[in-house]
Image (tube, rainbow, N blue to C red; front, side, top):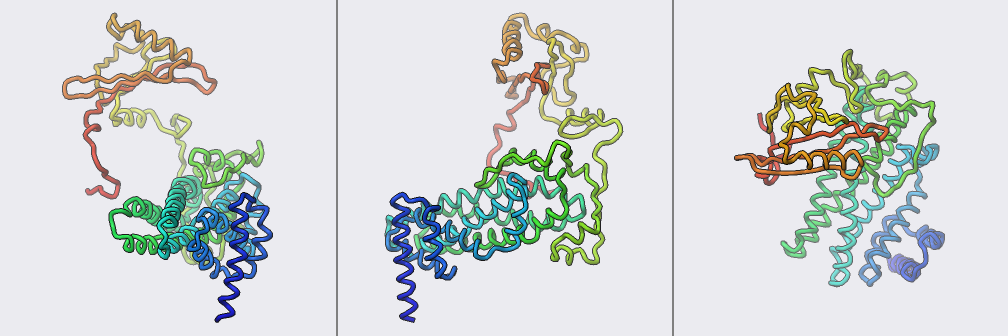
Length: 446
């Protein structure tokens, strides 16, 4: 036992020397080989214990965070698994490679979360406590973004493809787990924010427990994704489907990675979920991970063969509706809409919600004649600014009896950037100004 402690003491001293060099400005990459030699003789179970001791001795938590990043990376290199093999033949920018790369970052942050929460619980020095709390706030702040980026892209961009093929259970289980993790991280953020409202010992004990649970859940999700979900996606999705996903990813964003553009070729047509053949071939079924194959045994897949576009539908660019549905949609909207074309003539007004009177006789009328003469010069100024591209909106608000009316004008342009008209939107915002607190979907009762 004494010999073991001496060995750990020696390793700790070696790490301290390397950390000092990081603190003095040497790059982590330059020191990577030196770290590798020291860390190679340390069990992964020992590393967090040594790191805790280093924190107690006053080593900067941020410097140890850099080492933590490195030991996670080196540990991953030492135990390369299926995820590394799966990732290797994917080009940079491919959505699946991006998901794998994000999972490496998630694993690092999950491990650091657990490490620093446990370290905080044993730290007596007030200065070090403050520094560790700062690091923890940064880690938790980062991890909250996992739900808005990594998980959100999976749910919005990849789940529809497997659901279409009848694998709805996989998507349901993963989404449930995602939401559990989102809640865990949100709880940690609130706990850190409210730490002054409870005794210190109670706070650190709660933090250590909840951080450990969140760290495990994040790591478990990485394992599920890398070993089950991503190989499933790789077996099922073709380049056209991945191209469609890549075209939409930037709208949602990424977790700590910045993937380059990727395009399998101009001859590859992007395929959205409603455009694919949902039936699985024998080759696709055999390419699925064994866990998925086992789950499917004896359960006939219900492929979703519904057709999105019907006869008579209008293609709106973001979906298909018929004229009857368009009218019903406008009737249901809590907003009064009027469209003025590029020649300043009224071409359309919405049915349903009405703030100002509109009659069919107004159609085709110059918009200037729809306003009192004293305000026509303002109307012309607004339209001129829109047509010249100098203004993106004009907004006004006024009280009409018990209504508080909000009016917004916006210019409309086609894909070539040419002005095609102006949209007027009018809304009574009085009921919305009174809303307080929250009422969520799960609060609904029939």
